[in-house]
Image (cartoon, rainbow, N blue to C red):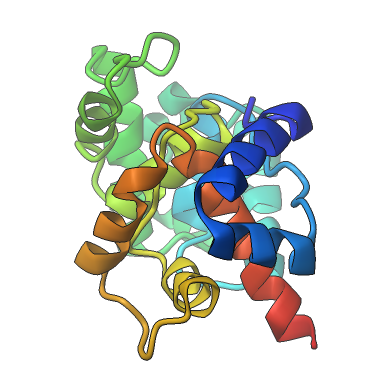
Length: 206
């Protein structure tokens, strides 16, 4: 789902009208493209598989899992498959624990991906019941897959560094400080987050 181009533009135009420093940064970097993931179990499984490995390595592991378990890599199949079979696909013991936790939460009905709580904090609490899904991963899922417009992953280092540059701060703000800076940007913090990544990457590319 994610935030569409129109939603991003509307949100960023509102923020630029409110904060001159964002207006300047928007003029420098331009509007970002949408960042959209598929809603549902497979996206969370891919998140677990991709932790602390390269995109190429994660894709290779997912390819082996899909070959073994089927394209859906269903929760039932994950739980039925032995440790050695999953390890042969490239899943460590720790990630197997996370994948099994995701499958168990989904099948028990505790994780309702088709009916997430409307309040963002309640949705984050639900997602972080899964072992291996921390606050950052939950926020990224809600932003990219659910299209929640007021999600702000303040723990992200690229966001913190981009906020430092945009706002002209002397040092990179902490997670708490980054969250406080963006309080005034509600309800457009999702657009702000996607823009800060875009702005950060614009500087990295220079």
